[in-house]
Amino acid sequence: MADQYKPHASRDDAAEARYDRRAFLVMMALFLVAPAVVYPVFVMKALCFALFACAFNLLLGFGGLLSFGHSMFLGMAGYASAHAAKVWGLPPEFAILAGAAAATLLGVPTGLLAIRRQGIYFAMITLALAQMVFFFCLQVPFTGGEDGIQSVPRGHFVGFLDLRNMTVLYYVVLAIFTAGFLLIYRIIHSPFGQVLKAIRENEPRATSLGYRTEHYKLAAFVLSAGLAGLAGATKAIVFQLASLTDVHWTMSGEVVLMTLLGGMGTIFGPVVGAFAIITMENYLAELGSWFTITQGAIFVVCVLAFRRGLIGELEAWLRRRRAG
Amino acid sequence: MTEIFGKPLPVIMGQLLIGLINGSFYALLSLGLAVIFGLLNIINFTHGAQYMMGAFAAYFLLNKLGLNYWWAFAIAPLIVGATGVVIERLMLSRLYKLDHLYGLLLTFGIALIIQGAFRHEFGSAGLPYSIPEELSGGNNLGFMFLPKYRAWVIVASLGVCIATWFIIERTRLGAYLRAATENPAMVQSFGINVPRMITLTYGFGVALAGLAGVMAAPIYQVNPLMGADTIIVVFAVVVIGGMGSIMGAVVTGFGLGVIEGLTKVFYPEASNTVIFVIMAIVLMFRPQGLFGSR
Image: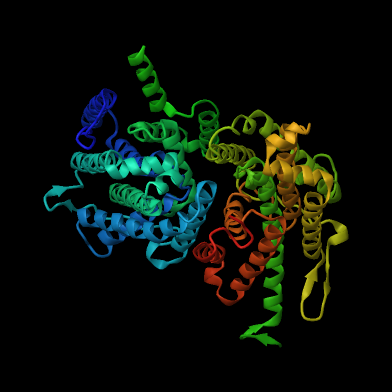
């Protein structure tokens, strides 16, 4: 899948593609049998966050843009899909699409504003814009304020898949995750993704080669927003709830943490990071502030000693082994 | 009763005062961020947590050691600044050669740890801290009632801001600092200990946050999360003003506080978001910020 876009794919690239394919198969095998071993709702939650983190990683790991406001896309998409399913009575597939569309639409103006600055400013601007969206959601009537939108109907996916059945719901969520994951893989390995990486490495150089870097950055931002929205919309249907938690800045911090822990700029890192953090949350959630402290400690350890993340370190080790 | 645009004058004056108070904190906090950013090139995400620590330091000095507000005003910033020095030496100093985003991530993590630890210890409910005796009560100015403590906060904050401006722009120490911001290697080759200067600068910026916390303690309650949302607004203030100039940070801080206060009178629904809206508008027309330079 990965070698067709590059006419001169080197042996190393071929090896990478082989590695990606194998890792993907292992991951899919694990997910297919997971509900037999683990509580399916837990895996579905982790899958939604994994897609969210992959979408975020598209922007940070491959575009070099650190957004501290991705909660706005997760949360707004959740509200939009919950509203579409509950108030408009749309079937779940259209409700999810409505959510993703809402996040994409929100991504255009926020992206246009944020890409006007770089680096640290970009992070601060996205954080501030997300806080604005948070207050907006707190005040407008359609989000239900502090209560959120509750008991969202799941309905029938594409007419005949009854999502009230837990097994059906699980495999539909897995299908959505897989579609999103493969789309992100495709984007990263497309010529567009290559230009994005070039911009990450050296923006003035990319400009001098004739690329309109703002257009690429905006496209990456909007794509990332839309895919994060897909995750948020799916999450709202699974949990039958859209609430302020998903729009709050702590959620933006969490997705940064998932990506950092798993490995920024790796294909599988965000998935691993999301599962690790959601598992941890499962055990520490009752302890409230301890969860926050642990999250902070993981940030500190990752930044000081472990910048490649779990998958990044693993890949580096595999590469060393292959070379030596 | 006098009215302006259909709103009674005392209401407007009252919100204007609250705006100036908030503006004092925005100015002090964004000033600290700007000083740190100037030399270290990182955005100190821990700033909100350090502001909160200042308020807690004042609370403990009063309740454990019996030291009143004026002692806290002098000591609490030193305590908070000292913790900042430790953070810089142990952790931040390892990141200067890396992408600046790592500094942001690290300080975000430290903020989570500090806020989580304080919340674990003291819960989310606020602890009361009373206004010092000398500053309780207020004066009736005829058109409004001016509580003494609030007037003090505005004056003290302005004083600290001007003193900081003076140190950085008009003293020899400030000249070293500005030179090191431009070219640290060159300054180091003249025999100035730049790493120590960086450490002290971080400590100073953090101490400013601690001082803001002391001043905030009698106005807002002493609460583990008091800085968590404030810091996001201060980030927006910093984007609007640009981090290029000290005076820019001060003017933007006070100005936005006043605008926020007036919005509460005329269109209260937007009072939470007005600063972010202004940020968006400034980004459209002057992305480098009002006082920033490219």
